[in-house]
Structures are given as structure tokens and as C-alpha cells.
Image 1 (cartoon, rainbow, N blue to C red):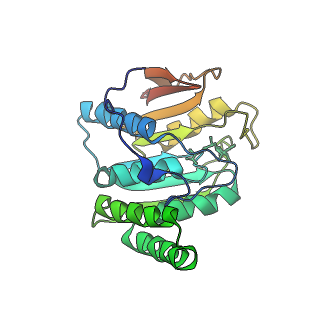
Image 2: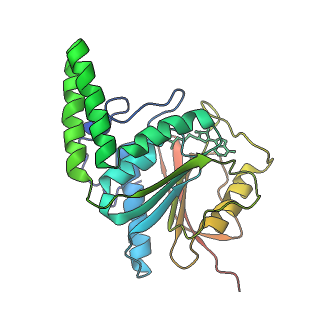
Length: 243
Ligand SMILES: C[S@@+](CC[C@H](N)C(=O)[O-])C[C@H]1O[C@@H](n2cnc3c(N)ncnc32)[C@H](O)[C@@H]1O
């Protein structure tokens, strides 16, 4: 895969999991360069349809919210709302904390927490974390991004009150660290169906990150881009408008 947007290898160490962004147990941090590449490709697709945002973004397998929080920090002004759902209530605690960093109040809270660690332990890593909070303060705008964070089984096809989403980006369970949970025996198909219901059909893109073996296709969607990187495949889909 050739990067189209993140062509230079930048230093994303401010985003290191556990530094300012919180680390959820049994989750892995999503690579920041890849997250940035994916979201810029999504913006480009929507701009091609004449829609310049700000965008409503949803991750239905949000885990600790690392992916959404990094996207929120990097592209603050392009986002109006972030919705995060996951089957697992425990990881949602971390997601809430990570997404709270997308506001001055949340960053101030984190700053005080880190200052407390510096006072207690005086570690170099905590000094670096403080620098990263200061860097994040330069990224966020005056207008707050609306945040919604709640429990949901994305394999359950019962109605759910999320609609009008422009970008769904989700890193689905791969099977080694995290497996699919929930009621449904065909999780990928149900994921596509539920995402279809949530998307704004006129201006939207669905991005699924999965392991290379998973078959990513559904008759409600047209695949518009696809690439592989390391152990992952990334598929971009647009909803087919049914008449
Ligand atoms: C690869 S992790 C996502 C990590 C996330 N992108 C992050 O940045 O922290 C996959 C997530 O899917 C969730 N999951 C598993 N089954 C689910 C289901 N039926 N509905 C919603 N989420 C589910 C797991 O709890 C896990 O948090």
C-alpha cells in the first residue's frame, strides 16, 4: 500500500497510548499514521461528492476510543460529532476518558492528573506527558465536538437511534486478542446492515479495518477502495441508494 496523504513518516509520539491517551486493558493502540491516512481518504471521498463537513463520525467497535480520540485531535475542525459504541461496558470507561480529552475541560483535568504524578514521582515520562497535553491544547478548537458514548452490540439488528452519520470507521475484532461477542451468528453481515441504517446515504463512507482473511462485502454497499497493510486489510464502502 502506498500512502496518499501521510506520505512522510511523522513523529506521532505525543499520541503514544498511556502517555496522555488512556490505555484500555487487552486493547492495542491503532497506528496513528494509518488512522490519519484512512480518515483523510474518507474526507477526500466525501469532498468529491461536494460535502466538506464538518462530519459526524461513528465507530461501532470503539474499544478504548483510541482511534476516535486520535482522529478527533488531528482533525478537530473537520468534525461535528463523534459517536462511540462497543459491546463491552468496561472498555467504554476508557473510551469516555479518551474522548473527554477532546475538550479544554478534559485536557485540564488530565493536566492536573499528570502534574500530580510529577509531584509524587518526578518521572521524565510524566514531564513528556505534560508536553503532549500542551501540544493537544494547540490542536483543539473553540467549538466542542459533540460526543456520544454508549453500549451497543453491533451484531444485534434491533433499531438503534444513530442516523445521519457521514463516516463510520471501525477496527473490528481480529480473533486473537478480541473476538466477536453478541447475539448474531453472522457478525460481518449484521455490521454492514447496522452501518447502512446509521449512514447518511447522500454523503457517507464506511471504512472497515479487519484481518486479511475476513470477507468484506455486502449487497447494500459498493466497495470503492481497498488496501492491505501488514496484518490488516482496509475496505472503503459507499452505501447503495435503494429506490
Ligand atoms: C480491535 S478492537 C477495537 C479497538 C479500538 N479501535 C480502539 O482504538 O481502542 C475491537 C472491539 O470490538 C468490540 N466488540 C466485539 N464484539 C462486539 C459487538 N458484537 N458489538 C460491538 N463491539 C464489539 C470489542 O469489545 C473490542 O473493543
